Image (cartoon, rainbow over all chains, first blue to last red; front, side):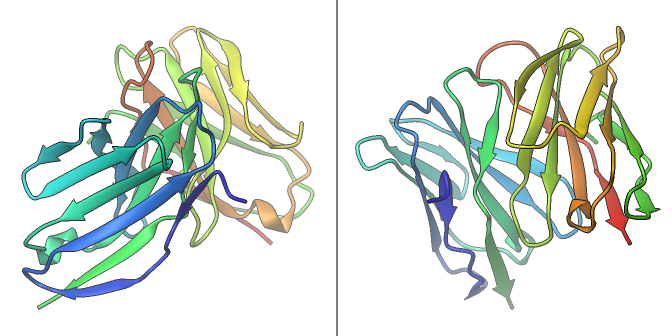
Length: 110
Length: 113
């Protein structure tokens, strides 16, 4: 079983749609959680950290459920520029290693 | 721009050869991590360097080795290249502290033929 699992997609959605991505992780001792965004042939960039209380940044909302070892990302009012691969990332409890999921590809269409 | 620079951007090597990839970390960051990203997959952790010492290693064989220099720049060396080593190699720098953001360079795309 992979340490961090994501549905690879692709998710094809129209502009303005709401889309949700899910991710599960296997190490219950994990302490830090993130969503990164990666555009085609570019490096990953931090989208947002994920906290147990949930957090929101504009159209993006991230949630963490430690009991179920589950992380989610919700994107509201999708834009064409949101088209990218979204990587679910878990840091180990030493904080020195990031484990990435395989990524979920999103394509927003006009 | 993250301030993390990698060189070269692209490289083609023959199976069995050796390669050295370079990374300059962002100013103020003394921690550098290396990741391998195969096509269609997420990045996989190779190792991390903190203050010139290896500070964690992923599931990669010993032919993957590294260095960090006093200015915190870093090198990744791969010996006896195999076809499966073809991938995007990403360097990430971060400041000390737990859970701090990692800033990635643009990567080196290595092709082994």
